[in-house]
Length: 354
Ligand SMILES: Nc1ncnc2c1ncn2[C@@H]1O[C@H](COP(=O)(O)OP(=O)(O)OP(=O)(O)O)[C@@H](O)[C@H]1O
Image 1 (cartoon, rainbow, N blue to C red):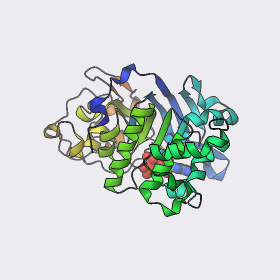
Image 2: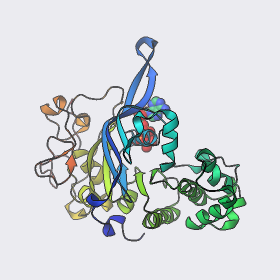
Image 3: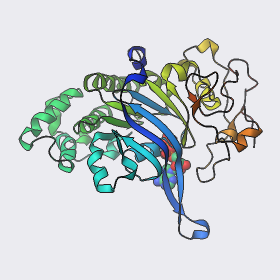
């Protein structure tokens, strides 16, 4: 792997905002109590997030914390229950379905498994051109073959690949096709949901480098969702740490990896010393006990408190806002974000503070 994206990137604050989610709630419907009616379960709950033009925001968190649900809400696969998803000045969350579909071409998604997200029996050319049927006027019909060839070249495939069917390609080649398909609509933002997780290490590095090159060339922004901190460390300019449907810490990659302030971020990073900016300084491993609680019955106050080694009485009462606090340089949703528990905490094991 080459230099990480944020080694060379310009400061985050100066680029235009392409996506801003505020107080976002999204999730699923479940049968109501005693089997009557249906009730909404907000898996994403009051989430704030900003993505700037041409930048990459990595979203990390344990399995089940709502990363995929966030992705699905942003691209419009599921509706928002509340809050806003402002994209280039328009609130996508409040648009009627039809108009939303029109804006949708600007926000594309690449899924983890191209074999299930795309039709393996279709030719590569048909997969790439499919979006042009839904959003006519992007490429004239008589220019489509040339545009497919250009997109294939862009993602490192040969023109001959156009006639092949997806099931004839390797996983890495399929993911390149999925990226070409997303780029075919000339989006400003691509949501990558575990887009390299199913790939071998060497192919993974190739696809990450491809994404970085495409960003430098086209200025596309990525919301890059991954449970793999090493991958996010490599590709992200900024990092948002998610726990039980909310962002608990967000900052530049240097801030989050070099000076993690939320106890949940500290616990995640302590398990992967290779991603720490200052590995010598890292706390010994903080073992998080238990699982992420059900989004249907989240803890009161701070959602992380039931697994937190720093939890106090106040945490059960007051919801901590995601704000820059005294002693922190970036937003953290913890009442005790300024407490120094860095190297020598008594936090060998997360105690329960129920
Ligand atoms: N279609 C669905 N219907 C009901 N609940 C769902 C559905 N999809 C996800 N959930 C619930 O939403 C919560 C978050 O799931 P989500 O897949 O968004 O998390 P994640 O962080 O992406 O985890 P993973 O990396 O394992 O996919 C989980 O409690 C899950 O059970």
